[in-house]
Image (tube, rainbow, N blue to C red; front, side, top):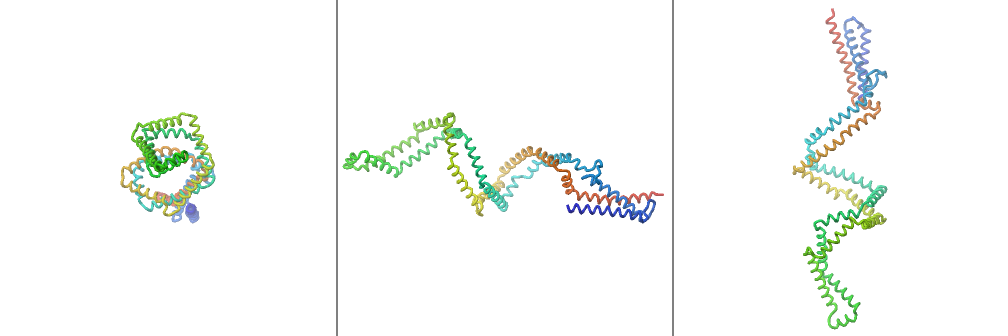
Length: 424
């Protein structure tokens, strides 16, 4: 703004000097038909005044009506605002958002290679970590607000109430049981049972329960037996045999794919999945249980407490200089940078995805961006539009006024000299 005002004053001063020189030349003897230095001065100043005024008119006519007079073809920018808006929008769309040109530049740019080079610089990783820390802390602070927590809780409860838990469970179990995957679960459970039954603690527990039960139910018989043999030893032997039989049965089940236990388990799983998927009454019972659980105050309080602990833990970790999360982020990004430098196929795949995504994005946005530019320029009031353009190019336009004054004066001298040469 200051440069524009300064150039306006300079061009106006130059025009004023030319006008003063013209009047001085006329007074000092430079009238029509005269000769001498003042005649040459008059020729220069007269042409300079004409050139300066003509260029002043031309410059002013771009932005407003000269002297406020509604002269045709003046105030060109305000009157052509809609045309300018459309032309500018089309220019930006076709020149900057042309898919072919943009994708060609992106291909040469090699986004994956440049990303890898950038990520291999430790300072850049620190910059990323610092930015992530600031954004994460801001996000955690936002999520800690009571209104936000309440809104999130209400949203999750509403979604959970609409969730068909029975159908989801049926679909998941159907997938999990394909190919006999549920039998693998049964195998793992049976192996755990076998290991448990084979332990000394279990056998001792079974023996003590047998002895205790026998002494309560048949005190006289156990007393008589004790006179001939120890009931405790008999219970230990029985528990050992019982554990051995159970382990043997479990091993049979594990080794026999057609065992009755497996068949009953298959039938039970199939029936349970079918009920989840097709028995509306059973599905309503499952969903009713889910709804009761979701709406319990203690469940909500528990979840809120868990979220609070998780948030505080994340926040405390991020605030530390040796943050484990940020260190993991740095190491992951650094590894990605080195991988991009060593693996051309990965870099090529990323470049192809970037080009594809960029092309689709540009196709979707280019018309919208053009419409936005056009609508924004159209919405400007005339004074704002003129002010913005004048501030951008007005200083250079004042040079046109200045040059018009000087060049006009030189042309005046040349014309005057030419007329003197051809004069009789």
